[in-house]
Length: 195
Image (cartoon, rainbow, N blue to C red; front, side, top):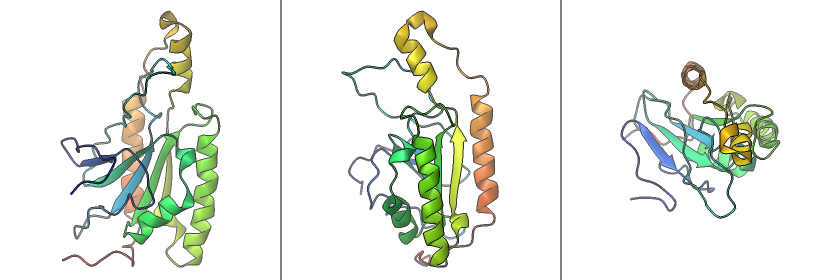
């Protein structure tokens, strides 16, 4: 069974969805031992430069994190567009942790999407703490954005900036930081018991 807006999952341990919706976390993997994690990933972080175009809509891409277990990845146009109900719905559906991976400060296509995301996560963290689930279930990570590179490419193909040589290292750092943080996240009491 597939969700509306879902792409075929690529090989490996990824399931990729392109449209966030309040019910988008329903298909999280509920296998016994691995923590259930939903990751909202900005489509503009950690990707190669693309010349801006008013007439074309490119297919969203997210970096390959090579997760050691299944993580539900949901691509979002900008992490600043995430609403509290998206995060709360993922927790209600049994996610042990919700991660948001967004652009670094100063390199957001939408100028301040990463700051809005951080403020919303703080707000939702207070609510989650108040109901007893613990704000430690909400994780925020940053990767290089592509706004600067896209703008340079839009000005002139000769002005294109070289690819970021540290990108793979930074993706690996996010993966390792997420895995380390998941070690301390208890099982979500709202999660259905394993069959």
